[in-house]
Image 1 (cartoon, helix red, strand yellow):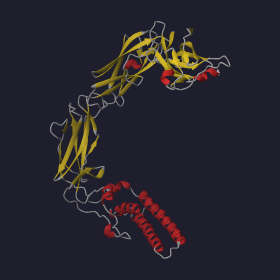
Image 2 (cartoon, helix red, strand yellow; image 1 turned 90 degrees about the vertical axis):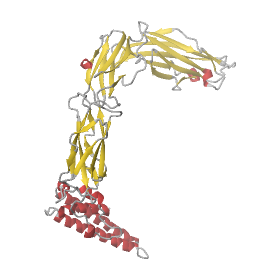
Image 3 (cartoon, one colour; image 1 turned 180 degrees about the horizontal axis):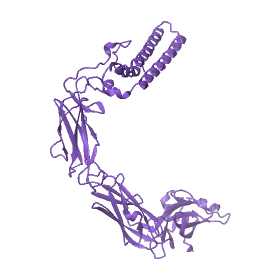
Image 4 (cartoon, rainbow, N blue to C red; image 1 turned 45 degrees about the horizontal axis):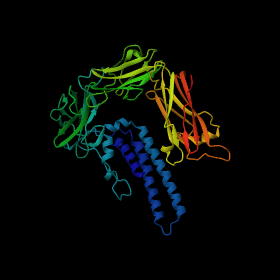
Length: 490
């Protein structure tokens, strides 16, 4: 804590050295408060070295140390608040930054019990250049500052994008003092994808040299470029990213890439999006135009399908009307294209349920040997698969019936399972209990349960179509018979 207070006091001393008197009073008050902290610490150490130790006295003294520390911190904060911190960046003669000072100078020597003027950093005359640093991070030797660090090749025509950047170098001597008047040479490696507008520059009064770096219409192998700066034996570099025009476009439906022909219901809305990259896989410039189309044009995109990218993505809703059939959705951005077929179908109208196998054994601990796959196929009125957004519900019709406890539906391991359609189908696994149900004393040798399969299609919460089918599953003795009862509810 005391070391941090010393740093704060050094900042105030920097103003005192400037000679304008702006921090004299604040510095004096803070220095007195910090001297009090050191005295209280010394007294506490004396008490801890006593034999025997009076812990009550130690606790009381540590409380006074804490009070003195809080007071010193308040005095330093008040002093910093009373002066113009902007002046910290402009010292007499040298213009050295306060940040450089604070990060490179030891304020106290190990073993010293008090602050001595012998250990203060003082303003001096700059020497020969020994290092180059980022002007915003003076202690980062070997790095340059590029603003922005990402530019666009000259064949990117999006309005407002940057085709060049400013690169800055801070030249310092061995004492971390900025060196004015130093000749800095900016350069790039051979076959670079950027050019330097003015490679020879001279540092200003603050030790900073600046040049402009321009993009070309080349991206190279990875879209990166390096700019170097050198003066005497000191050198530094910075990396740049150059982004090109659209080269790769991936069409997505509902936020995901699609590997098959999806089925969308009439009246629904599909969110169509495109991910657009340059030749090196970088996101293209914000504002890149993307045009979405559908063929035949029986359905409509919002905003006529023309939108712009943000973070390499563009998205637009496709509103489906009442016409059914196969359609091709396409997206194009500056020559980069992609397309995806979709099928527009009607609401559920036909339902078929099968169980495979129809007879399962229950006299086994192996689940697969006493399981039946119940599969539902749902189609629209024209025989096409129902929409993928159709929700299929498998459930025991009467869960209060004790017989249903002999069965479970997986993967939920209960009497209820819900899942969407995929290519017109959905399934669940019915597992029978590994129990011999024969009970001659009661004349019972079977159990039975009804399973209802319902397929429902809704748009914005409004049900547009629903069909259902029941099956009765019989558990008889050591085997389960799964006959299909062709009941259909519309």
